[in-house]
Image (cartoon, rainbow, N blue to C red):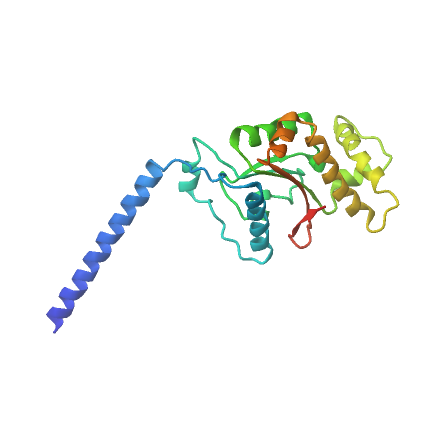
Length: 232
C-alpha cells in the first residue's frame, strides 16, 4: 500500500514538475521574444468610447481588471503601438488616465497640460495619435476643482508662461458667468467643450471626424468619487 502511494505521489510530482517546466519555458520565450502588438484599435469610434466608459465604471466600483500591465505587455508594445483612445487631460497629479479608465501599456495616447488646454503642441500630438497611430476617440477631460480654471476665474497676474494657459481658459469662464450651478464646475466643463472647438480647427482632426473615423468628446472627472462623466 505504501509502495503504491509512493509511486502515485512520485508520478504526481513528476507531472507537476513537467507542467511547471513547460509553463516556465512558455513564459520565458514570451519575455525574450514577445508576440508583436496586435491592432487593438481596429474598432469604431463608438466602441472606443464605450471601452473608456466601461473601464471607468470598473474603476468606480473597484472591479478593475488592470489589463496590459505586465512585463510581457511592456515588451509586446516596445516596438509598436496601437492605442485605441487619446486623452487630453490636465497635468494635475490626481488625474492618471490609465488608472481612471482601467487600461495599461499601449492602450491610451495621453497628452497632459494644465487646464487641458489645446495648445499647438497638444493639437499636433493628438493629430499624430489619430492620423498615424489610429486612435478612434479623443476625450478632452476636465476635472473637479481644477487649479488652472480657478486661476482663470481671478483677475490676478501670473509669472512666466502661466498667463498663456490662463488666457486660453478665460473665454470659458466668461461663457458661463451668471449661469445656474457651481461656477467653478461650470467653467471646468465649459473649458473642455471650448478646447474641442479649438481641436476642430485642425484640418487633420476635422477630416477624420467628418469621415466618421474619429470621435471627439468632452469628459469631466470628479476627484471625490472617481467618476468620469460625458459633458454635452
